[in-house]
Image 1 (spheres, rainbow, N blue to C red):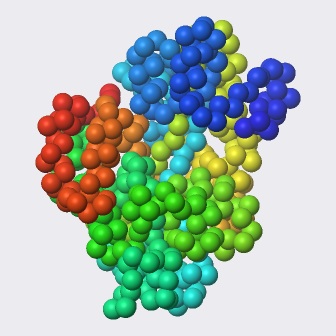
Image 2: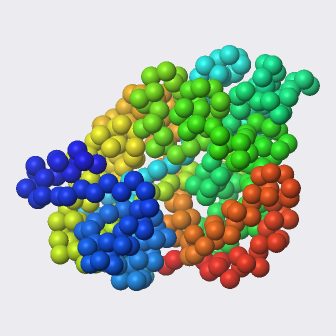
Image 3: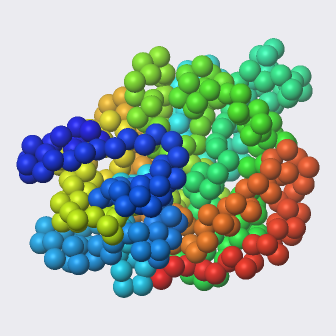
Length: 399
């Protein structure tokens, strides 16, 4: 980001004071706003952006967008321009999507073929579970298919994913569901397809023993370290981890497409670039926002693994694709098949971008699911308990 800002200053002469807020980001921004010291621009998660827009803290950037002769709506990936009513609340400054990242050495030692990279070749869920069992090894060298396997003494787990909405959104779409499918007003929550995804994840822990529980996972290092140290053989994670994997020279990793259930649709997400209503430099802030999110001017952010572009041309034009997604430590073989092409071929934006009360829903849903992850209750049982609390929040999509 700092390099991109420096380039902006050199090309425009506009001085920019960048701020790095490593923790309690929204809390610190709230304090700054209350002190009449709001920044000109920044990034926000969509639910917060909607709320702050309603509270008058964010500017409507529609006029800036429509009067910008270099900016056209059709240039952006669908869903990047985030609206509420007639207003434009912000733009996704970048895209993120999900994939399987795996330790090649673990696969080689198990005698397994690499995960598929093309969506049409994706493993079925049953095939994926079989592979994960072969990659889950106890302290005595037995895999999870062995009658001698010790589920209480696992040295290498076959699989891991974090227990929050992001990775689950990737799996929900693989089963043709979301919080509110197709940005509609009929919820997918507590439907058979939605609950099936959650139960399949729980079964990876408690039935198949190929994934650690959230409690066990807390003692594990970060995914980049755990993949390299062979605590995990496969990790389902956001593509931003490529930025962490690339510097790990000892990590021999590859990339694969997420297993399918009834669909191969990919999900994409991204933080919103917003302008604060108190800014006295909205045009300059808008120009900075465009600069940072354009690979032409901020190539390192994309090429080094952190971001994916928000402009369609960088998914359809081979020359532009090669600028940021050509073979490297951050963009390993298969990256384009797994993460680039699906964005324009078969993808949907994450529920976080359009679902009303998204954070409030998750604040009820995921703590309740802790009982499922530890094997005390089924998903159906938990959903039956929490639906009276969830139903008032299930108001559909933001229009």
